[in-house]
Length: 134
Image 1 (spheres, rainbow, N blue to C red):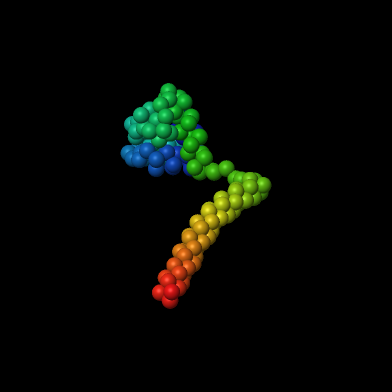
Image 2: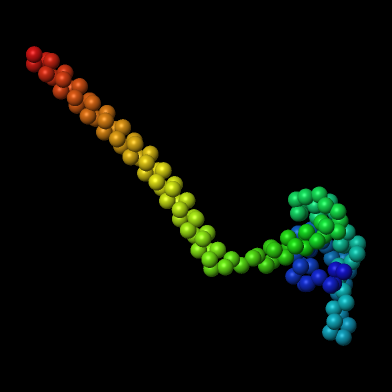
């Protein structure tokens, strides 16, 4: 079953589960019979290890299938269509504009508040001066 997997999948499984190779590679008539990973080496791909990797509790068979699917997605991420990319960019721009609008709104409110304070101070000081002159 191990050798039936694509080489890139086997390599990713080795990386993910930290599998150590203890056997030797065997090639006969330009056909790879063994890549050197023994049944004992592959025991680290346990149900517990797979469930931890996929983030859910499953039966062994379901965990194995889900592990292979997750690895395949990591190696071959889905390609977005042009329209999906365009929609994602538009959404990101709209969110950015909303954030900028919120910041601008807060800045305008703060400026008005500061301007209001300045006018009030001038009015009070003008009133104060007029009282002195009276």
